[in-house]
Image 1: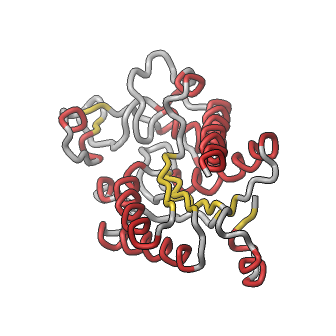
Image 2: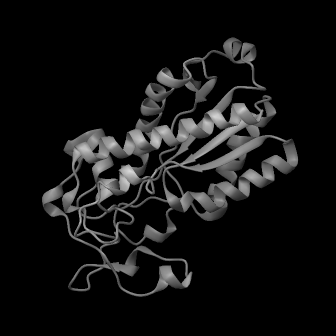
Length: 253
């Protein structure tokens, strides 16, 4: 595995750009409740490649993976009314992603993975994927980073935490595994759905999640059961899932 920013122009020219897979982690800077840092998604986007590297070392040590620096800002309009959230407009984020991917296509890279570490980035990443592929023929993959449906990951959720969503126990655990000092678990409050926006297919916003007394909290579930150990389990499972798909790319080629 190589880091994009560490290579020289000459090394980049010498790279097998037809078969190298470029990985671009997409983070965000947005509220994650009272307990987890604004940079939770960026922290995950920045740390997950280290876990992927360890997994590749065990399963495919010569895999031609080129990791770009994680993007710290994303599309977080659903959280913009919570203090500290920084977001692109939808049209701005489209052009940022498009221009970055177009640059890679211009240089001849045939395989680019947009690793989504914030769910709000997914829709625009998919739009850019189709646009770049139709114009340049580049394979632009859009993958969610968190293996939240993995049985081992689901087993980390506390029994009394019946619904874990944005900023909940799993994401808080991941932040703790990366930097425990950034999490203020003593300030944690559970978030509950205030309406049926998610079930009805309405574009949800953070105000749809409230505390027991009806105060908007912007998270789903109870993060109080989060631990560093749970976060390690989730990060390792997520890295395994990404490596599974990376290996699958080679098999399909």
